[in-house]
Image 1 (cartoon, rainbow, N blue to C red):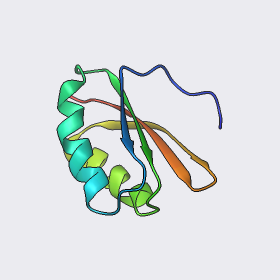
Image 2: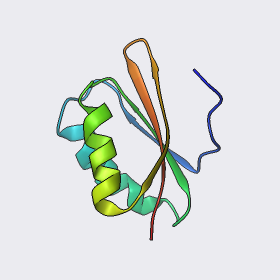
Image 3: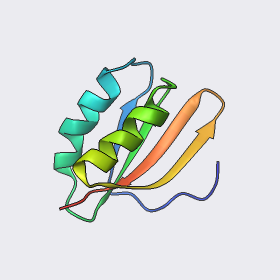
Length: 80
């Protein structure tokens, strides 16, 4: 996996299927300070689409995304 940005918190959604990872993300992002970074780890391939849309819709920034085998990682900077 490439170098990853610093993070303030992590959400482990591995083993969960849509819509659970995004529902958990919606709750967890509120624990991160504005401008802070949340790392999300998931195994559901639909997260590659759903998390991008989540960020666009709620004005968070998807700063990096990586795939390692069957695991997907996302680094999200919380918007205001």
